[in-house]
Length: 558
Image (tube, rainbow, N blue to C red; front, side):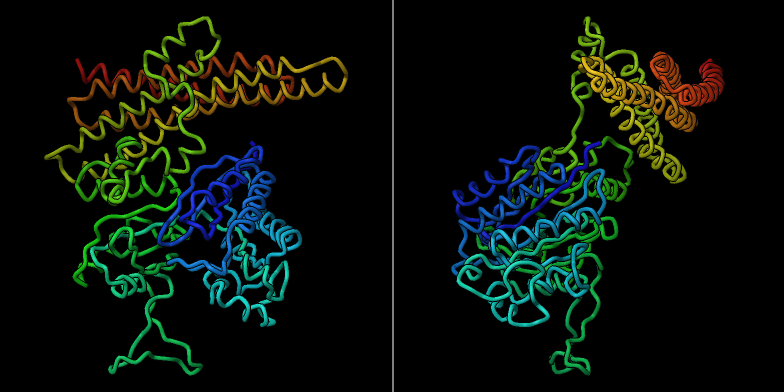
């Protein structure tokens, strides 16, 4: 699996489309880089660019973007609502797949050295790439902004990690750049029905990690023995927030960076902002996403709001996302398109088979093409089994049902949807594994080296063609357990739970066949036996369970 890195550089230009295009074109020229999002802001005078790719390609893309920004942007005349320290203000690397945070930090330092040496821009490292603990926090590094850079460079403690440590006309024009590595950050704005930025700033201070400054009875700021402001802790330790007025929207916003949405979920913070706003006579009118958001942040919000409505959260992924978008008001300022704004969909959406209509899939299945075949159909049976179990669970907790039903069947519906999604992914994975074998067989074998490489590639592809149906087979046990619990729910849907059992059994038997047929191509006898033993044991457990459930279904329906 090729490692995948996300890079989200912020450039200090949000108004001139020619400049923004020049910067993004420079990034996009790198082979392997996929430009996911370009989000300019007129009032902030800032553009957030999001792109992904293999590590080396992402580093090169970031460098070209920084070089283009240095050519086009003059920080001596830049003014905007957002804090900034340079033409390229900040460049974070984010691990997406197959790469660690430490490796992303190494990429950041590599880029920083090149930017300092080749472009003559002062570079500071932050977050996981910070060279000293005091520089981990971006706000600390950016303090004083570009206007205070000359003074910062004179201070020994603020010598840059790379690049010039003296202020010059070139540095005045480019400013400095902060480069680091961090977890996925969600840039998010909460819209308020006020034009008073002080009120927005107060609510932001109550939400954010560093909290709000305390005052004495006379309204004077409280300070400790060293003269530092005393602050009341904010509500959320991983949230950074500021309040501002956006003229183009004619309203104030609370601008938030979620540095860990798993600790402080988006919907929890939005609900806190709604409560605090109401206490201060304000209304949250909606929200705005800047850049991209992980799918799990929206599905968690969707489940939360459905449960508040006393509805089952075990609905489809699409319905969870739609519920989150409506509930958070993400389409208030502009239409919100999940296909464009959810990073999971931008990097890897549905595979080509799953994206087909029912007719399109069965037409392809009925053609003379060898794939999709039985393995993909087996996985599809598993997905339909999970779908039926989710349906029965939701019918069990419908209007007028008792609370104990919800305690059992809300989680059941959620689990069934997750199993369904896993099986759906394997519909395409099975066909991709078959295609991998075909591609390996076509490799050249004219020399001993080519023959050895072809043999190695063929064995790797064969292992994948075994492991995909094997995991489908083993997952079928979970599908059967879900169907068994569903069968005890709404008895008007008992036949549906019974069909879920039949589909799970067909899934298991079909996946087993596909494991067996590919075992013959595996040269490693020990591995072949280990795979066969796992498959035999899994199928035996599944058939014993499905046989018992089929008999129970017949008895109940008769």
